[in-house]
Structures are given as C-alpha cells and as structure tokens.
Length: 433
Image (cartoon, rainbow, N blue to C red; front, side, top):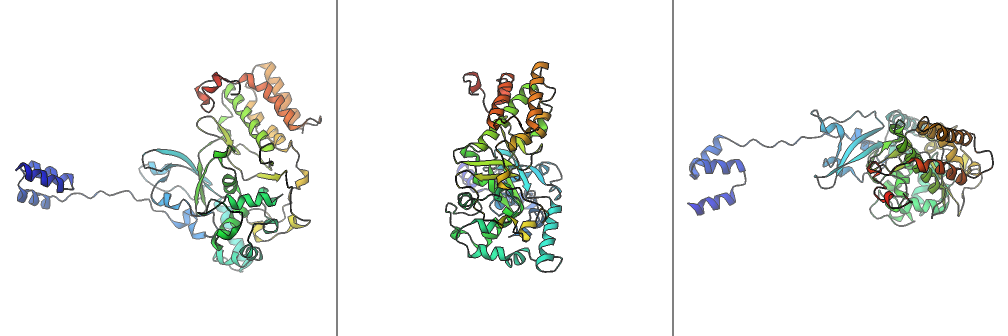
C-alpha cells in the first residue's frame, strides 16, 4: 500500500485530487469517482486587454518603437490602476502615468509611462499629415509620410547628416554637428544592433520611427544618447511601445516647493550641479534649456535630482559647432509642424549664452523652492542673488561664478541624514557630499 501511495503521489499533478486520494483511504476507484464528481475549479488569471489604440501601435510606424511591448503584454509593466479591484486601463487622454516594472515577477519598481505629446496634439498632428499630404481626413500615416521628400532622402542616406534634420523643431537639432548626429544613430536603442554611426542596420521602418520621434519630441532620444549609467543626469530609458515610452520614475520638483529648508537647500545645490555639468563635461557638449517649469526636473526616491523632461533641451557641440549652412534652419515641411506652429521662429545658435539656463532657473524655479525658508539674514542674501540672476547677471560675471556664489550660501544650510540617501552616509565622512 505504501508503495502504491508513493507512486500515485508522484503522478498526481492536481493537489486537490491528491487530497481526495488520501482522504478516501487510497482507494483508486473511489478517488477517481470522487474527482469526477467534484471537478477542480480552473484558475482564472486576470486579463488586461490592451487596445492597439491605447498604446499607439495602430499608428506605427509613426511612433517611437516596440522594444518594450512584450513587457506590457506579459503584464511585467503594470499601471497603478491595475492594483485596484477594477483592473482598468487609465484614461488615454493623460500625458503620463505611474506604473510598476519587473524583470522577475517578484520585485517591482516604479516607472513613468509617458506619451510623446498629448493625445489632442497627436490627433491634431495625425489629421494634419492626412489632410496636407493625401487630402483626406484619415489615412495610413506611414503611407503618407513615406511619400515626403524628406523621408525619401532618409531612405537613400547612409549616415544621418545635418541636411536630413534641417527645419525640425526639436531644440536638440537646432545646432546640429555631425558628431552629435552620429551619436543619435550609434545610441539608438530601438534597434537590436546599435553601435554604428552608419544607418545600414536601420530598416525603412526604423528610419521612419527615428525621424518621427525626433520631429515630435526628442526626449526619449536624449535619454538614449546620454544614459544615466554614464553619469548623465537623466532617468533611465527602459524602452517604448507604440507612442508610449517607459523610464525610471521621479517625482516632479513641484512636489518639493513646500519642503523643509535643508531639503530645499540640497535640491537647489543639486540643480546648480546639473546646470554646471550641462555646461562643462568631458564630451564638450553645451546643453541649454529653451524652457523650464516645475516638471522639468525630478527627484528619485533616494533624493537625487535629475532632468525629468528633456524635451526642451538643446545641445551645442563646442568642438565642431553647428554644421547647418545658411537657410537650412528656415526649411519647413510636414515634419517641422507636427507639434508646433509652422510659423514659429527658431532661436539662433549664436544667441545662446553660458548663463542662458541659469537665468531661466533663477526666474522660474529657485524662488519657488527657496523663498521664505531661512533665517532673515540668509534669506535676504538668497533673495538678492535671485533678483540679480533673474535680470541676467548684468555685472559681466560668468554663469560659473554666479553658481559658485549661490552654492557658497546654500552649502552650510543642508544637512546629512538618511533623507538624503544618495549621499548618506558618505556625507558624514567627506566634505564632497
């Protein structure tokens, strides 16, 4: 009998049937009859039904890419709303969503799931493509864009050159050098075999996706070009699916405008450090903002500040300069007008000064972060600096000198404790932190 039980136990896959066998005295015929009379209830796994429309896959290849779609369909990326009892997808009208990401189905981490632009702007741009190129209200976006003169030039090109991006509205491409464009292709993460400056490894589909992304919003491209693992102040790019991109999660700086004085001082110092690294770095690129707001910067859970939204970030190559010839910046086509008015004037590369981004930050962010936080004498020093900085630092001093002046006021105001996990406990032993 014992051998029969062991044999049966090794063969019975359903735990419910095994319990029935043991409870009925290990009589096979009785157990089988009981199992037939009481069939096991199948385990029904919740199903999250993705629409191609929600992800933007129905618009491909006028999209970012498909590198992370499997994660969505395998439920290894979940929207926060999936943790509720209703298990519904969030509204498609939102620009960004909070989500959870896993590689092993056990440990989860927070991610930001973001659209290139708002659904309204996407719909408007799609309609503009169809009406401008095919004279219809709706169409195959890929078929329409393939007909354009610009994309036909992309198809023939072996290398991404300045003339292929002329007139695109992205600040990243306002002052392009060949070195910068080579980096775009070499770091393009939506293809499996990136690494070459030549576009031989890009299919027609890949080229259209890259062109479309650059035309609508260069944020995901910048995250790929300058990854956090190399020390750049951007969140990690995890991939894209349709018109959604996934990156490491940060809280927007606006959430910290009411923070304690020592937290505000720490974030302001980090912000200055980011601006300094954007102006002076080993690759000799000068980064500048065309616009900043309370969502431009973000803070990780460890207190580390990063650039959360790189869509308004321009890049000037200090080694090669801009390689657009006269008149190329004024060139306009359908790709120039997908998210902006075609009549919008471009900022001249020659007009960007080293203090450009600092002045914006002094005008729009630092007063909200630092006002009314400190003892009167210190607060007056901070406020006086911010007023002078917001006017453009007219005394002839450099941006670096100005940032050093403000940093000198703020450094004694920050503290060293576990709230600042990105530098704790190192800050207890080193003046660097």
